Image 1: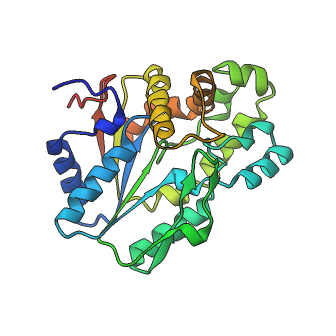
Image 2: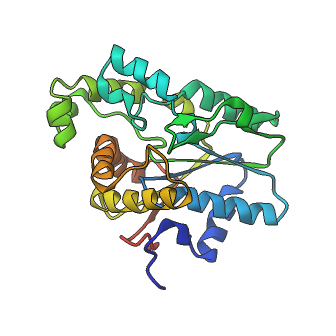
Length: 268
C-alpha cells in the first residue's frame, strides 16, 4: 500500500465499507467519527457518506467545526474571560446548543438547515447559506475531540507548551476550557450512538498533519486568514492539552479504535 502523504488521498475502499457497515448497525442513527487534527476524519466521513448514498441511503454529515462560535462572539468571550478564547477550536468556543438542536432534528426526521463554518474567513456562514436537509437514514458527526472527558483540576496546574507557559500563566484559559468540556459537552456526546476513534501514533504527528490540511484549504481558496507554517505550529498548541487527553482516554471510550501510522495508514 503506498503511503498517503495527504488526507485528500482518502482511505481504501475496504475500510470505507467496514466503517459504513459499522455505522449501519442496529440502533445507530448518529455515528461519530473522532480523530485529531489532520487525521482524515472529514475525508473518511465524506467517503462513507458517498458510499451510503450510492446505495440509496439518505445521509447528513455534520462537523463539530461547523458549530464554532462566530468571530464576533469569540472576541466578546476573549474580552470577558481570556484573550486566547478569540481563537476557534478548544472547548468553550462552540455553540453546543446549536449542535444538539441540529442532531435532534436529524434524529427525529425533521427538516433542518446544517450549520457551516468558513475556516479561511474564520466565521460561521450566515443561515441563509446553510443547506437544508430532510429526513435522513444516517447522520455522520465528525470532530477532533468527540466524547473526550475533562481533566482533573490537579492536571491543569503545569503548562504543557509555550502558549500555556507564556500566555496562560495563571491557568484561566485552560481551566475555562476544561470546565466547559465537563459542563457543556456531555449533552452533545450523548447524542452519539456509536463512536469510531482514529488513533494517531502520538500527538507529535499532529502538527505535520495539520499543516498538510492547511495547504489543502489554501489550494482551494487563498484568503486573509490563511496560515503559514509557524502560525499552524502555534495554532496546534491550542489543541494540545485536550488532544493528549483524547489520546489517553478515547481508546477506552470509543466503540471502535482504529490505529493509524504516521501516513494515516490503518494498522488494524
